Length: 258
Image (cartoon, rainbow, N blue to C red; front, side, top):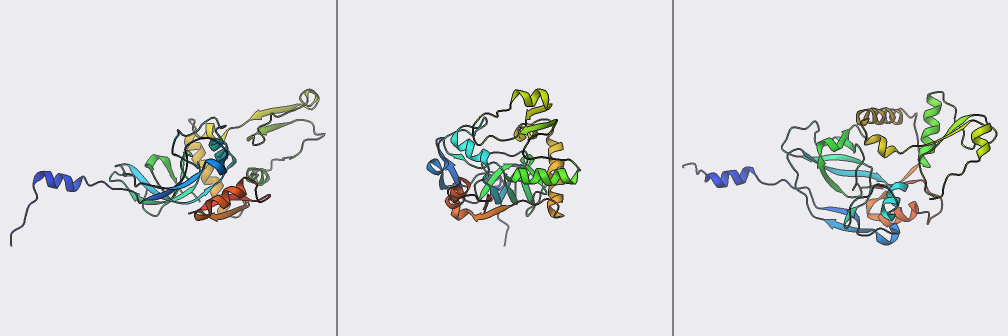
């Protein structure tokens, strides 16, 4: 029996077969507004996996205050509309790789680094450089106090009669200005400054931020850094959103589990 050879065009076509991600479900919004009014869960078509792309399956993603601000349209950096996928942080597992040479393997756990739009969906395709391997507020306040203790740094939550100190503002969910008396600046030597994590992580400190993330994850694994959170299945997204919006009273950080 002879061997049948494919025509040259057919052979080229067979080697150029596109690799696609699985169909996905995502939380989308077409307009800015109240999250419980503008968000919807919808099917998303498969996406082509490029040569140096990585397709990941999301494992978990938090509902952060900044996520809600983006959806409301009051955050400085927002994804383009319509059909924006919500979410900005999360933990994922590598599902498939493009044909190029990348430093990742199927099954690796990764986090978006720096964080990027669109983590509230079941599958994501992005360049390999967008993911950092070894990934596992107020949760922020809980963590800051524990980290300061590890480094022998004294913190106070309420400034009363103390002399000196630096007040760092890292969020503004109340959307109200920070008010500090003139006497606090003059007579108590108080310093006031702001900190925006996204600006720091998107700057020339990308490698430094990844080192910091690995350090924090090691502390979590060792049980030295703990925080309260509540896992909610992605299928119950609207329940998790209502909890994050305070409709069920004070709740821990809501984390979507995929």
